[in-house]
Amino acid sequence: MKIIPPYQITSEILNLINEAKEYLILVSPYVNFINWDRIKIDIENALKRNVKIKFYTRLDSENYKSWEQIEALGIKPNLIKNLHSKLYFNEKSGIVTSMNLLTSSNLNAIEFGAIYNTEEELKELKEFVKKYLEPNLEKEKPNDEDLYLAKEKFQIVLQNYLTNCLEQNVSCKWNNGSLILNAKNQYNLSLDKVRNNFEISGVISGIEHDNYSIFTANSNLSIVNLSLNSSSIQANSKKSFTTNNFDFLTVAEKKEIMNIALNFIIELAEFKSYCYINRKAIC
Image (cartoon, rainbow, N blue to C red; front, side):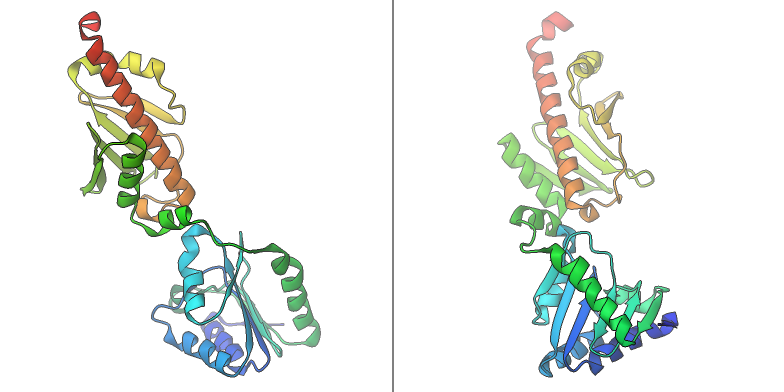
């Protein structure tokens, strides 16, 4: 085993690809070959030499671009949940590294890598693949719904989801970094730029403001903190999310936020209806 200087890791990986004659194992959870034509050409040339290539990458709905780029090379990706290992080897040598096959890692990151080229070391790499990767292969990609949530803009996803669930036309547009919803009432959705927590607020009238305690007493929104200002009721998520950009949320986070928004809109609509029907009694 020999440690590779960070600036040399990419060239060693390319050498390994170009020197492969029998087989090539590529294990990279995340893949991005955009603006990195050299590696694509080298892999394609290996295929032309009839090198048997196995490419392992991470199975996450959000990681669909990785396996799509592998498929574009004419290689069937081997998908594994929770994959974090990065290693590359052929019949003569191998590299264990911190580096994913990403354009950004190639250009900017300070990575660690080591060359393994003895017979015993290569045997250990093959045993690792056989023991820990092959048994965990997933036969299917994420379902169409999860891929849709991963690929589509959140604004469109949310608008379609609420339109279907509420059985009414819902419009959704951006305004100064927030999403403005119209669903028989106006709602504002945002992610805090510092804490990454989600907030949704709905416009209320004076009588609704005065009877805010009725809303809180009947609310089932246990995963948010409710608050009141002069013209709206607000709900802030008690948890923080992984990013403050709606489009970059994980599929699970998008589902969670969509569910919070739906339940908040339903509860506020019911509260407004209650205040209207009982206007005389509560004035």
